[in-house]
Length: 310
Image (tube, rainbow, N blue to C red; front, side, top):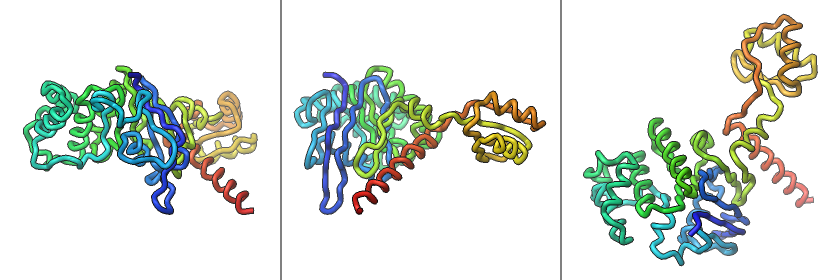
């Protein structure tokens, strides 16, 4: 079975609330796909529909071309983490995983394998009820890996992780994708996905507003801007603004310049006797790129609403 997730035209209402409004995207093998948007954007509902926990009003969600409910031995096809607190607190970490493995006909050796992968081997005999949120996240990820699935779905797996844990999970997600798995990771914080995601599905109000590679998104947000470091920030702003540039102060000694190429910035500063230590093409952060994308989407929705009201 091919390791893919296909979501097409999902719509779902809860009373007067429209949770999903035509959600459509595909998660392909070999990539970590970030599923990003503010709380309430429809991420968790979409994941629950994919896993057959919620039924959509319209549309379909397939794993390897099949609905989840039709999969035999589903843990061998898709592993998921939706709620790190969904465990029996009196069980040890190892017994929690043994119970899951037994329910799916999986060998006990897989339990030891995934405990090692998740960095929990030393805590295997501790009761899960005494785990921190970060350790529960690791235990949930271990459970998702039990069947060695081709598809992984993790809902907000960074919650509760310390900086070391965040670095670990970024590397772990990349390694899973490198093995040819399709990995879908939801988050409401772009900073968590920096360095982990290859592709982004950005959602808002139950629909997709961006579906692009991380590289393309950052390139589009970076535009023709130039980053400038100077100890004479005010003088530099004056010289560049007179030449028609748009200049914004982004730090005590840092400016972002739009409308002039880096070579022209260097010539103007040199001609004006303005000292500088760096002039380079600006590379937007993932957070900046996300804000740029969602800002445009909000403006579009606002305009659309205004036109509808007329």
